[in-house]
Length: 333
Image (tube, rainbow, N blue to C red; front, side, top):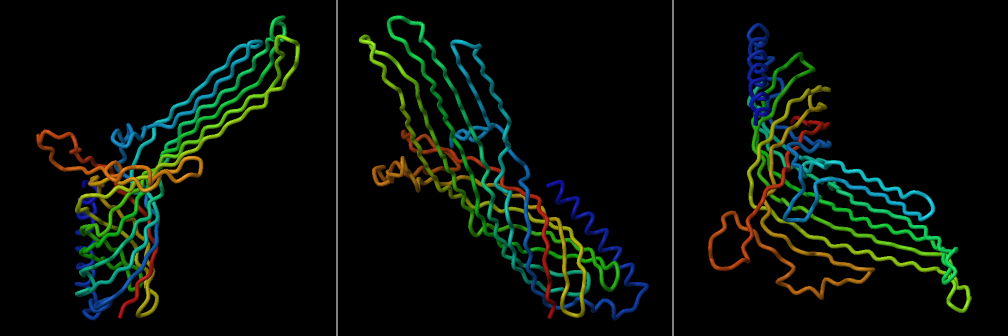
């Protein structure tokens, strides 16, 4: 919110500067840029207002974790691990926008745009690996030597897709006949707000070596196993009005065309309304039909009441704010 206020103050300053320049210039200059226009841009946004500590209701941890263990009855055992905090925001991703507007004069106009956000999934990774070497060849009863290893990896992914209608006020401060600074301040109305949460588990183990039975017969060991599972949920959101602002530079080429580059800030949050299981696969087998319909969907409420039932779950917010860089073009009629 402070960033939006700062953009507003700066916009007012730039607008006042533009009016002052116009007062000492020719009156016909104020007609430049007046009228309807359409614009398009593409950009990339970085998540802002991130939360740490994971999301308890999704069982999504808030840190990357790696552990490696090595056990050997001949050499010393070795074990190490690493934890790294992972901040979460749904605002990071590619942004595409199509808009139109009308400039009342060279300095003030209104702008309407439809923008889509294709969020890059936030990933949290837990990995545990271990190796074992057992040497009992000096054992006169049952000689044995084996090498075994195991790997257990779980990857949590949280992605986001959004579609917004963004009405805004556009303020322009001409620097010259070709270059202009501008700002855009408005609201972000969500037309589509959906997230996808996926848990991918991959476990594998192997063992090789040899042993002798009580009769002295030597047999080889060669065992392996693998197990993988994927579970995905679709998250729907309550309606949440957001705020949008941008500050940029417009470069005019001829009467109709111009290019622009801007920094855009959007303040938005994702309030979970429903969680629906949409995928459940284990070792390549689709197990979703085996899950009862009532167990696939979890409903959330904004206010929990004492109804004697434990079916109600209280909604929670996931940050979806962003700061992005956009590059696009404008066509003026």
